[in-house]
Image (tube, rainbow, N blue to C red; front, side):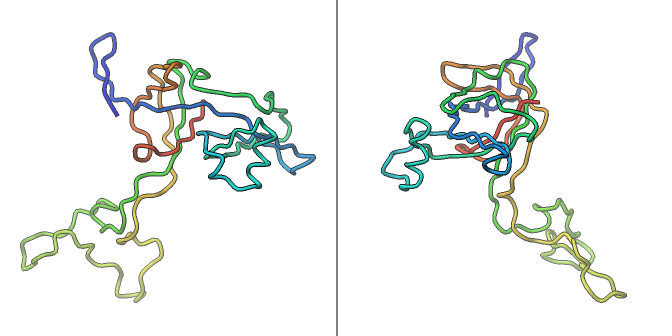
Length: 197
């Protein structure tokens, strides 16, 4: 993340996203595959690190192996206007576009209720000791059980989320980078999915 200043001198919080080239590997149709989708590959990979079946699949689109392969579903009544071998990079976006960014958030491990759910914890006074960050009572006397969906300690993070309505501040086609306002999910190096609205 970084910060830049606009023409009025206001500071803008921004994230630099590397939007490298995507290559169309396969076009799936309802007649052959049962659904319509476009399969793309990203981040070129050494040929020694892929399986034989993958090598044959990549040969159909030019022979370049990719580390990441993803599909994007399309409505069955729409014919995609792309061809196998087409390449797309950051230049498909322009400054001012509104996008949705999806990715896997940072993993936090096993966390308590204060960090995970924002509980206030207990008081230090009134005879309590070492209970500032405890969850407190988890049930009632009547039902004599803990209700489902009760907010309790547990694994936090490593979830796929989407951040909507982010604005592209600038596009650098030479470096294949986007400058996006605000924060995006994950750590440095996280694979992101960017969709225009």
